[in-house]
Length: 297
Image (cartoon, rainbow, N blue to C red; front, side, top):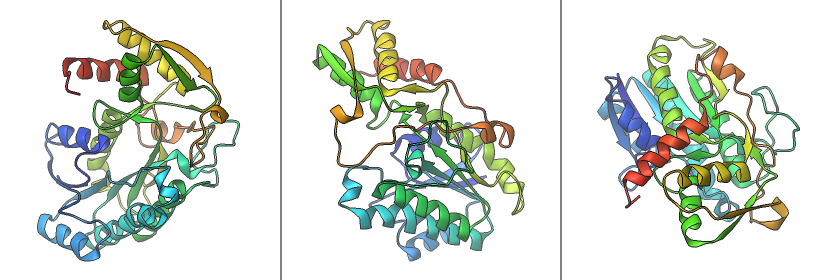
C-alpha cells in the first residue's frame, strides 16, 4: 500500500516510518515547513501527487500549557487539519488512521474511561483534539481514531528521557503520584496502525473497525510509579538512581489542568480491532536499550 503519513519527526511518526517498509508499504511523510495541513490546497495537492491508499495522521499541536495562550493555533492544527485530511480522504475513497488523547476527558471518573463515556475536556488542548475527532469522522466515516496517553519513545521529548536526564543531575526527584494512567510506547501505537491498514483498506463504511478506540499500554500506574520503574531499569544498566519522593498535583502547579485519571478502557481495541494493550514494561526495556546504546540521544 501507499501510505501518506502526516508528520515525520514526532514520536509516533518516527516509529511508523521505520515499520511501514518492513511491512512492505511505501510511504510519503509530510510536515512543516514544506507542508501545512491547515491549508486545503496543500492537502489536496499532496493527495493528487502521491495518490495514497490510506492516510495516517501523526501530527498534532501537543504543547498542553501553551495551548491555553495559543488556542487558535491549537485548533488549526488539531481540528482544521484533521477535517481537511478527512475531506481529501473521502474524495479519494481511502481510510484514515488518526491519533487522539485522554485529554478529551476531564479526568474525574473513578474508573477507566470507555469510548461511550461523554468527553468533557477542561483545557484548550483537549478541546482542540476533541474537535478534530468530530470533524474528521464527520468528513470521512472510514476513520479509526486511536485515543492514547502518556506516549514515550527513544525519540523527541517525553517522560522517560526527562527522568533519565534529571536522574543524572539531581540526587532527589519529586514526582506526582495522584495522576493515574498507563505509559504507551510509540512503537506499539505505530504497530497498531500497520496492523490495521490492510483491514481498513478493504472495509466498507459502517464496518465495526471504524470509529474511536482507546489504546494505551498496560498495566495502569501513576507518574511516580512509572518514574520508579524507569530508575530501576536504568540502575540495572549502571545509571545511579536518585531518591524518589511522591508529591500531589497541587504541589506541581501548571498553567493547564492535567487529568487525575488518564486510564482508558482498551477492551474494544482487543475485541474489535484485535490489538490488545502492550505491556509498557517491555516497551520501557526496549526503549532504554536503544537510548543507552546511543549516548547522543
